[in-house]
Image (tube, rainbow, N blue to C red):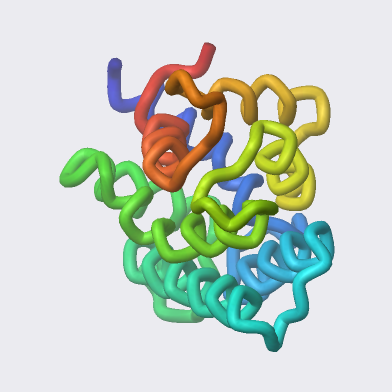
Length: 171
């Protein structure tokens, strides 16, 4: 895949992070995402799981800012995101998944209704909708995460899918 195609795909992902649509990614976008997950699953922010999600969101923000916020203004513009993300992906394709792991782990923990560390495709679909993923794509995306015979989705599947979202060609 050529560099311009890779850059274009990363730019498309910008909207995923820009939760409020104001044209840049900030800490507030990650806080908004955490609040949406908590609200969807009826988990209190001050609970242990709620705190883990907020800590994961903050770690995710810090990792993203470290990768892409070149001018240090605590906001990531589309250009900073594209340039920072593309460089890091060339250096280490798993980098995004690693900085997202605490957040993704906490999301699984919140969506997991029976406490076994895995979610159902339906629970994953609810989480994706809460994060603002296009409703028409949520079901198929959630079902595609259940890659093994038990039909459940664990952290490893989610982290792998997150990395693939940024590093594989669009279908």
